[in-house]
Length: 200
Image 1 (cartoon, rainbow, N blue to C red):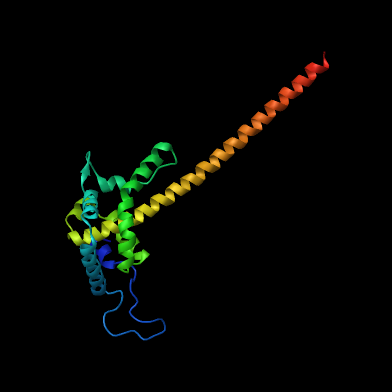
Image 2: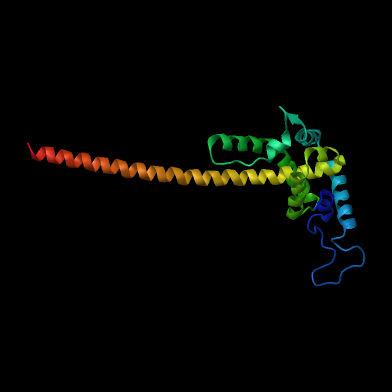
């Protein structure tokens, strides 16, 4: 499937055009490209009015190069393991996304964008190259990037929670083994002391 085709498929249905059990109104089918485009146009228009200079700048930074790598390419990376270095990088990624997530939480809910639609627009950022994103209409790319930032921030939190649980379990196992070794050594020392006392 080419990139144009993926975008034209659009996100899952965002708005219900008729009540459950009721008759559908005449007009565009809810999954039609025309309706999806109209919905996206409405949301991008709302976003254009809601953006603050700070949030706008942060969205722009995502598509800028930093030491030879595009910022968004670095922020797409998932931690390879639960090592200190990997988790520290994940924390830094979370700090970058936090202001965008805070803005997105309020805006995306007020705009009526479903979680599935947010995931879909996020997937477009994963799918398209930076070159392609840089050449799209700015309002559309801002929406995609905001959805990416909001969804990625949630993923980062999930990753850190999973890492915390894993590390706590690991520490508990290490503590249990250390306690068993210490108990065995104490028992051996006590047995040795009793034997020595009996020989006196």
